[in-house]
Image 1: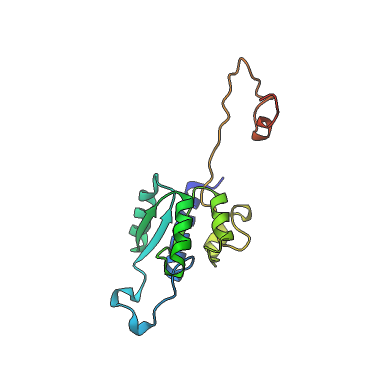
Image 2: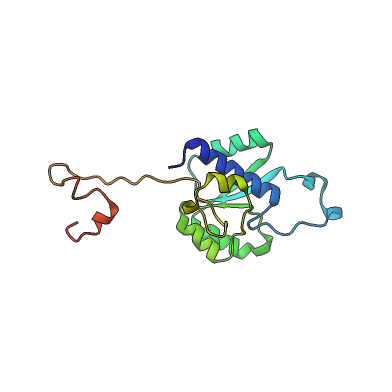
Length: 169
C-alpha cells in the first residue's frame, strides 16, 4: 500500500504536472501576444473530481506549497466524463480525479485523457497502479472489509473476495 506521504507527493506531482504542462483535457494555448498578462504563468489548475470528501485539505496544502490555486468541480464520474466529452477541446479541466480505476479506464478509452510524462509519478506509483500509456495514475487504494458472524462462519471459509463467489454465500 502506498504510504500517506507518497500519496500526497503523487497527488501534488500530478497537479503540478498538469498545471505546468496543462496536459489532459486543456485546450491549446493562445499565442503569447493574445494571452492576458495574468496567464503568463500557471497560477491555478482546474480539477474535475468525483472525490468529494476530504479533498480540500490536500488542495489547500498544494496551494500553500506551490502558490498554484486549485479550482475544483465535483460531480459523479459518469457526469464528469460526459461533461469532458461535451466540452471537448474547450474544456477548462487540467486534471480528472475519479473514485476508481474503472472510471479512469473509461475516460482513457473515450480519448478524454492525455499521457503525462512525469518522473515523479513514475518513481512513486507502481506499474500495476497506472495506465500502461501513462494516461492515469492510481493515487489511493481502498480497504474493503468482509464482516461475518464468527459463531456461524469460520475465517478460513470466508476471508477473500474470491470466496464470496462460492455458491454457499
